[in-house]
Structure formats: C-alpha cells, structure tokens
Amino acid sequence: MADVIEFWFDFGSPYGYFGALEIETLAVKHKRRVLWRPYVLGAAFKTTGSQALANIPLRGDYARHDWQRSARRAGIAFTLPASFPCATIAASRAFYWLERERPDLLGRFVLAVYRDYFSEGKEIHDPASIAELAAGLGADRPSLLAAMASPAIKDRLRAVTDEALSRGIFGSPFIIVDAEPFWGADRLPMVDDWLTKGGW
Amino acid sequence: MADVIEFWFDFGSPYGYFGALEIETLAVKHKRRVLWRPYVLGAAFKTTGSQALANIPLRGDYARHDWQRSARRAGIAFTLPASFPCATIAASRAFYWLERERPDLLGRFVLAVYRDYFSEGKEIHDPASIAELAAGLGADRPSLLAAMASPAIKDRLRAVTDEALSRGIFGSPFIIVDAEPFWGADRLPMVDDWLTKGGW
Image 1 (cartoon, each protein chain N blue to C red):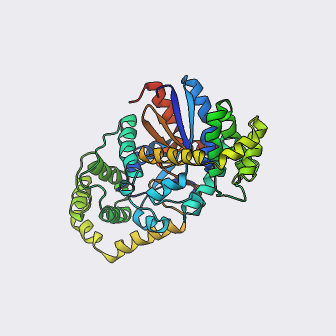
Image 2 (tube, chains in turn brown, orange; image 1 turned 90 degrees about the vertical axis):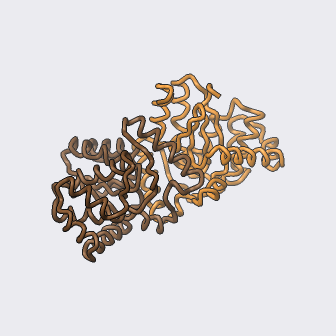
Image 3 (cartoon, rainbow over the protein chains, first blue to last red; image 1 turned 60 degrees about the vertical axis):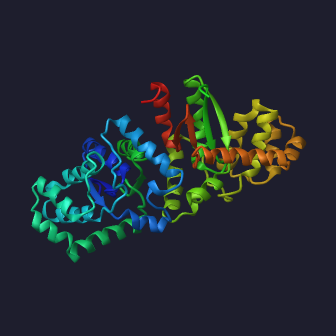
C-alpha cells in the first residue's frame, strides 16, 4: 500500500487525537492518503500486559500533565473529559459502517468524534451519541444505528483488531508507511523524515 | 536547581544511551550542566507494572527494530549486546562513588559504560569490568572496587532510586528541567524548546 499512511488509533486516546490532527497534513505533503484504522486498543493491552495510561501509577500522572502540555504547545483545545477513559467500541463500529457506506465522511467523522470528546467533553461511549454526530455530517442515522448493533460490523471491528495484533500494532497512534512501524504522536517528525528520504 | 538538566537513566537502557549522547550538547546550548542520575529502573517497573522492554510481547519486537533505526538515523554505533538486558547495579554504584571522589570523570564514565555495552558489546554487569573501565579513565581501581561493595554506596543508590519514585520518575531517559518532567529520548527536542521559551 505505497499510496497510504496507515493511522491506527483508539478514539479514547489523547495522543491519537493529537496525531489525528496532524496526519492529513503529512499525507498531503507526501501525496498519500490516510488509511484510518480505529481498533480496540484494550485488546493490544491484554497482549502487552498494559492498561489505560491514566490508570497506571506514576505514568498516569505524567500522562495527564503531558497531554495538557502537548496540547498547549500545539495550540489544540483539550480538556480531559469527565468520562475518561471510556468505551469507544460504538465509535469504531460506526467508523467501519461509514467506511463501507459513506467513505467520503471518514476523516471528518474521526476528527469530529475526537473533538466532541477531548475538546467539548461530550459523551461518545453510546451508539446514540455517535449516531447523532454522524447524522450531523450527513450519514443516515437509522441505518447507522442498526449497523452498529449488527453482527457484520461487530465482526469487522474484531477482524481489524486481530489484524493489528498480528502485525505487531499495540499503541495509539501507531503509524505504518510501507511496512515501517512508528509508535506515538511524537514520532510524526520521524515519519515525515522517513517519507522524505525513503527510509535510511 | 535552575542551573542543571537532570538526566535520569539506567545503564541498560538503549534510549538512555541515545539520550546521553545528546544531553551535554543541549546543556551547553542552554548554559546548564548535566546532573547525571543513574537509578534502578527495575524498581520503577515494579511500581508501574512494567518490565524490560525487550521482554514485552509486541513492544519488544518494536523496540528492537526502533533501536536500530534510531541509531542509524543519528549515526550512532549500536549493537544489541548478547547479554542484553543485564544487571546494571555495579555501574550505578560506581557512578555514585565517582560522584563523591572524582566528579571530574562523571560524564566520561557514563558515556564510556554506554559505549562499552551498546557499541562494543562488552560485559558491564560485574564490578571487575566497571572497575577496569573506570581505571582507564584515571579512577583508583582498589578504592572503587571496595566502594562498590560498601553499605554506604549501596544505600546511596537505594536512596537515589527512592527519590526517583517519589518524584514520579519511571523511565529512561527521564529528564527534568526546573521541575518539568520529560520522558524519553525523543522528547529532547521538546526539552530544547522548553528551555528556549522558558516553558509555555
């Protein structure tokens, strides 16, 4: 997939949010398109023995400090939601229905979910909130609500998550260009460098 | 400690090695001196529920790939030693004796241990190897060997490690400037930015 930048993420990840805000610009610069890939980060945590950053002693405190500092530096509106961390399966399932039915909305949907959650502090864990948001972008609400509860879409998210683990993906964001993996929003300058030089 | 850059690290950490090679240059740029602080990273891992990166599923494979890639990018000679990961307590104890007796040798000692281990693939886990290396820099070998086995130096390393945990330090490298914490070698550009702007 030499024409894409794979952007693997979880909708509940602040660093995923920061990275998502920059990845389209990077893709345009290198004449690629973003292949958005939300997956169930918690499944990777089971393999790596990790858990939500915010809940880890020492690292949680550092992360809360670093999210605010990183957001201020980049000029990003950021507030840790009252409901953080929260379940993000509904948003990811909606994504894969949109990918099939309304691929034109994908990038806007990803950024809208992230902004609703990390900038507006809205709830994103329930299907109704996600359907409301997607309808605002032009998606068909009843079809989306039905799809989120369908076995086909649930299986799709499960399969994508299995793919992530089988390819060694374990964080958010996790970027892949031409089979080269990069973990973390602060690796975007290295991704840029890699694409500019064609590797090293 | 407005005149220093605190550089917390473990001698067994590849990212600590990469960071150590750059931190003096950054300190000089900002008219500060490096306060080297080796500590027992394994003690932090007990608190955060982590372990040596190389042993973690998925993350270990990524790290092995990333160490080589990061080293190539920076032009650093790097080979993962046959004895990796290894115990680094002897090196850290030697450091704190040198800090008391031969502070003029500290920076050279840190870089020499790192180079011996990650560039030459030499053993660094035993006191004899560390004493040999320090003697090559001009330290008194018998005194150092005696000190490494002394309760005073063992207590010193334990106290420094306790200080790390009490201050929220959990990784290598972990940099502190004016009470502001930065985790990871790839945060050095942010440290530079922080020092240039006086924070944000």
